Image (cartoon, rainbow, N blue to C red; front, top):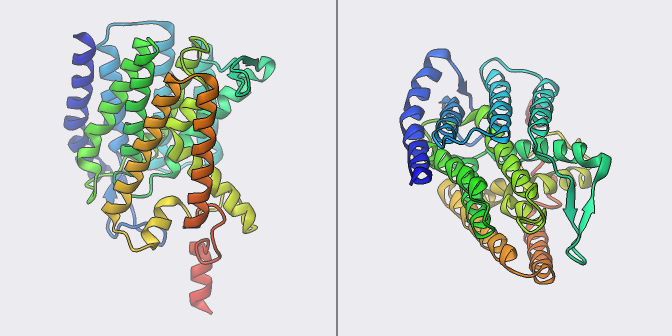
Length: 352
């Protein structure tokens, strides 16, 4: 009963706090301005991530479970949210923002979150990471934080995909008997869904970096929390499939930019949502299609958790092949010269 109340409380908090964040954002002039790469054509407030954060914190505290891990999760999540908020409000360099995420990751590791082994896909055994445990954990947390931030390009996209991923994690953890992680994932999903009421197309607000980085960081932390219970709880491959959209989209962006001899950190218009929009799909249709892909990946993740190791590996191989073929067909994997013309290139071209 308490678990249900915590989830409802998170949802209610997000529904109440998001409109307040919209008014505050307007007063503080924390708005997202349109440019060549963005699909919106007017200034949109971008403080919605604060509402997501508050909803998650209030829901988590209402559980009445005060462990070292939960304390570390809330403190580390707060650090990530603050760095994202400062970037939304005043702007900070990517290096400073990354340092904030690394610091938050180390706080989380001190609280007991650490990937100390990975599952061997051949025999289902464990491979100890040894001295690489902390670096791998930091890379996982910071990587997923920025991956979720990277897909935040359409109304409702990042929030919806994160909510679906959190719901999937809830189901997987419940099937494995990890009630606490499942509940925290459900609270995160409720927080994202409450915000989505105001973020779905046409969006009244954006979550900003404070929201996308926080969502990605907590999703990554909850995956590690499940991993720390033992090999039978959740495999390293299952959270990768659960967060398939942001992870694959980020990976393909790196491959695409290398293939086209572009700096890997240079923004382009070759992401999945850009490719779907270029096919003539509407804003809403594009988001709904990506939601559907996320649901399919979530179903596969749940299925993998219930299958034997060898069967799960077969599912993983099929998912990987289908994903790569689909990405190549859409131009997400290798892209094309037209997709990667940067805003500065456009201005130079127009001035000639």
